[in-house]
Image 1: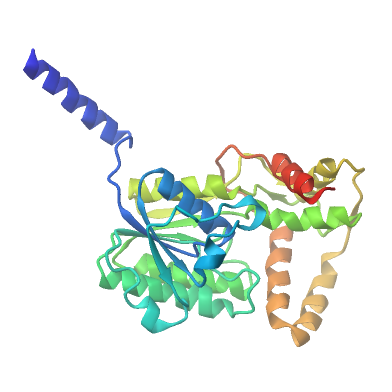
Image 2: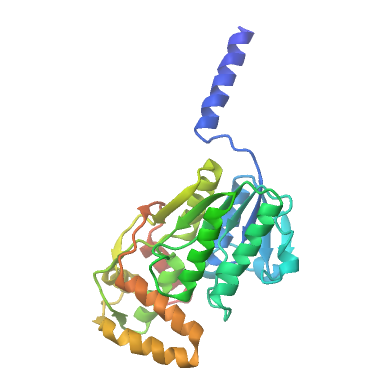
Length: 314
């Protein structure tokens, strides 16, 4: 009887392990922990019982509420690594003691050069991971990064190539865009009209919480590779605009502009602000090309928009 019970327990443990129900709790280093996605990554790792080491420039900022309803990191981080990711001395041993790394590190609204952050800073974290025997490195890239002409995506792509060539097992995740990126459409709708270049171009943006789960699932599986992943809903850009107006409870007002204006516009903007010009180059490329990943997650864009509208009091 006792031996039969032991055998049943053993079989249950074996099956559960194969199904991913039993996971060794690890120490995970998170780069870009205070960004929109990074905060959800930290929260999901904490929820699953992993020990989290978070890289941040400011602990005070990290424990404050994040943008677009992303969580505060207060109480979610076991080990803080406070410093500048562009400082080689700080990054050199940042991965010491970590089992795995997830990097959502990248330039957003900062004035920094993408090559300094998306490429060089990520590369420095990778070198630290190699030095200290990290087993897996999950990097959040972008769909079509190898085709988009923006310096931002070129920097990401260059790092992804370095990561693939590393001896560390790599998981490269390519989303088409975050829900947070779609707030630009909502802002235009609030001003009364949404301007588009190719209204029928398609995209399926993904919520940060859903993308965090996907990244951690791939990291836990340990399989090396690259995945294109998006949210559960595929929109045209016209559909995105209509969704924004629906959240505002206003009639949709959409104007179509010729893509021919983009090149001179980006060129002129680049004379005054190269960083903004590159951001426009990245955004406009996404608005002109279908960017669709494997559908994943449960969050709906209309709900996200409505929550933002309600909080703003519109």
